[in-house]
Length: 625
Image (cartoon, rainbow, N blue to C red):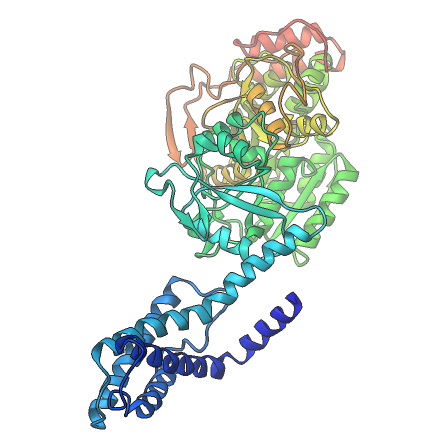
């Protein structure tokens, strides 16, 4: 039966250009007769209906002509909307006007005015029924098929009864490629409370979501408010933490959707949607980043930040890209991925250890890069606490090797990736990064190369970060481990962090640029939200355990030292810090660090770091992982 309905609908769609005008003519004729019968209470006299055949013929011609003229014969049965309905009404009114004008010109006695009016309204209703009924039937057919399909459907609630939510619902109603059964909307606009959109009611405000979800046994929530503030998203997750709901969200602004919303645009709610800040958009055009035609070398190119730097540089039209990393396996995989994305790009991969000054000089002599992005580093705080010499060899001496090689090779700019852990550090890793900043700033005062350090906080999803760890723990059934209930951190996405790094590096702002990271977010809140997003109940389905602060770890991070707090905003989300000059004996102290690291003298390493970084307060050795 349903197969026959579908075949009939397809046939009607193919033949609509001539079927619909004829349908309008037949509808009009029938409505005219009905209007006459109503006007004369079912008993018209022969005199009243003498010109009936002429009326029917002229009305049919008028309806066919206006149907074609207003193109309502080219109707989309599944996509016809409000504008199409207005066009249909205009076609019906015009048909009546043409009919009346024709009667006047041909001197044919007209029917009573009440008959003409009745015929217009009834014909318009008939024309609309013919055009909109297939869509309505399709909606019910799709719902029926989804319910009959194995596995059934999931009761679904849409957050947001605006234009995006309305279009999302209509797309879901047209499609059978999902298992959503939309029970209604929630929206914060009081004026929308109780209204009906495409057959679904607005059941309450967003704060009513838990109540509505319980009453309607909701399993899935679709957030259809583009650019919903992260604070509101986090509030929704907190309110629904005990309901085991699945969440999806529209990831882009309605402005960019070109007035079209489909279910395929939805994606699972991810930690990036919880960031307490507005994401900054960066242009990809080469003219904006000024990298077209340039040769760029990236150290640490196999890591999360390094790979994203390479991706954005290639997208911006870099002439030649040199990828340098000690991890040859990840380097191989990263280069294969980039070659697939940019098969015509000039891409060189070099295995090299930044701790080897000879290798660095050889690479810079071979490739002669104009720009250098130094992302290679040891960044795991607890591991560097038990191997402080390795932090010095890699983060301090390695940075010096790459920077001096860039200076000797005549590179035009050198951008060093630093961290918020360099501010009032309590860890060897943070202190080593602070010393590396000093080296870069010292070279900036004497070299023809433009040296710049860019400091920012945690990057969501990067290798070794908390998000992949939490995700793995949740998939394993828990527990999710958090060091301390009060720990909070700055977060930003990898793409945004790298976009800001490129913008800071190519804008030549100054020796130290600090990225505006917004507000810090509590790690325990992030853990609870990730458990909720996975459809579990925190502390019930998945436990959260507090394990204590690790060596070198702080409760919160800072982006600026006291000396640097006098800053100026240079561009969106980028600040140029006013830095004190590096110590005069920096070179001698770095040699002391090198000697202590080579001798594996951990206490001496920490002692020299304290003479260089006065705010460095080492923590006692303790559990590492």
